[in-house]
Amino acid sequence: MATGSTSNYSLPYPKATDPVDVAGDIQDLAGSIDALLPELTTPNTKITVYNGSASAIAVGDPIYISGIYVSGEPEVSKSDAADLNTMPAIGIAASNMGPGNSGEMVIVGIVDADINTSLYSLGDYLYVAASGGGLTDTQPTYPNYAQQIGLVLKSDASQGQIMMLPGNNPGSLTWGQMTYL
Image 1 (cartoon, rainbow, N blue to C red):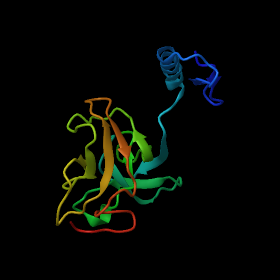
Image 2: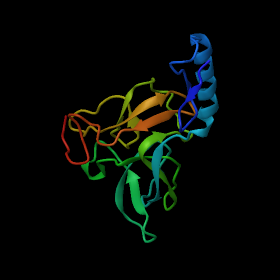
Image 3: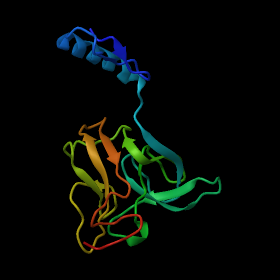
């Protein structure tokens, strides 16, 4: 059996002097990983924002900063690929926000709120949609602006997951450049 272990997570590994037991070593490692995984949290960076628009923002909507609210929170509204004034999106809503309410936005990492991604497949790239905003797996074309904003990590009707991809927009809208496609 493996007698060595990592210093951070105590994952076992064999030392040169250990007898060879590949199956047992792998089984020990798998057990240690199973025990470790619940302790890890999903990495993301969320900020509290204020919906200053007259429209509701739903979990999963791409949003842009439209100003600063009196409390100091960034004021946000939905991004729409058909409206350059609402681009680029800088995050994805992690909570539902009615007009005049605060909520959370993921700016980096995994959006794992109660989000419906069942219209998409695992690995689909998502873009800011035109005609009202939201998400689409079809890259918008001229006269709309294209911004790739996420990647589907889990396709599910109520517990989907999206990886927010800031600035990962080759040939499309980025934080520093806007283009028609």
